Length: 146
Length: 213
Ligand SMILES: [Zn+2]
Image (cartoon, rainbow over all chains, first blue to last red; front, side, top):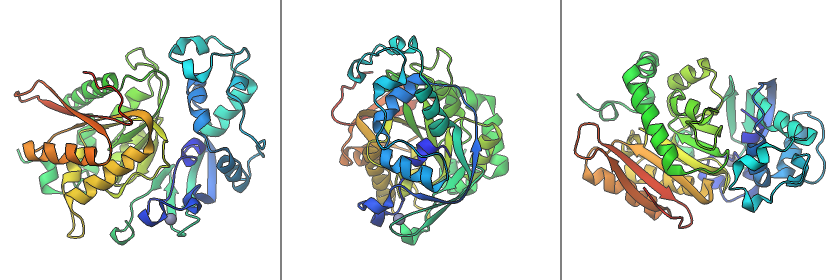
């Protein structure tokens, strides 16, 4: 499971939906694996505003990854030249000509190439543990927990 | 031929040999590919997106989503797949698909924070939610949890396209009513209506986007 996905995942239990403690899920006994994939600069530009930066920082600490800066990077820092504002990104090809910065490549490495191969994800509210095996998380709940 | 969802729940039906049969049948692959392209067309994505694939199976649709070929509009996309069948996911794992896979029952909800996905697709899966495998669950309850969870997990202006095989008109109504009750703008689209290859697409919008097609 990509670190990107962990930044969107919450506990599946209905009782946890409304609490802040159910996000992010906390990795335990996690084995990480780098799975290389093609750089997709326009995807990173699209997804960056949706990343919960504080949760990402917290997860990086828990996984023993390098510490991230306090604040999320500005979209303008993803490309070497100034890009069109995000609200006029209809013209998808325009951004493609800009040169991805080191920052964008680092985000790609962290969000899309760093994966949890095995381990557990633990809910901070109810304590439920979701097992991850071969990168696949088991989110099936016994019916009394649904 | 009896419909698989009438005989066994999907996690039992798609055991290892069924999963392999499903994935290697070129006819099924062809139909699934065609329906995925149709769903992508209906989504009208404008840039590389984060997409939820509900009932991703062995990743046949996912491979199209993550393709950088021109036949995948605005791609390559990044996807997350849910499936209730471990043996289907095992086939996806063997194929080293690019999406993240979850063993999960969409009838229990969608475990992602609000506004996560740009879009969602579901190919030939939603009819499974109309079965209840135990007395504690009702089809209406499962459909409700799924569509409520899906609605919340999509961002404003997001879309979902669910191709499914309704057993009859009543089931078609039950599914689309559940989507509307969750807050979606919903339209049912039928390709090749009245023929043996009729295909039903439920096109869903969040936040009153325009429906065309
Ligand atoms: Zn929980």
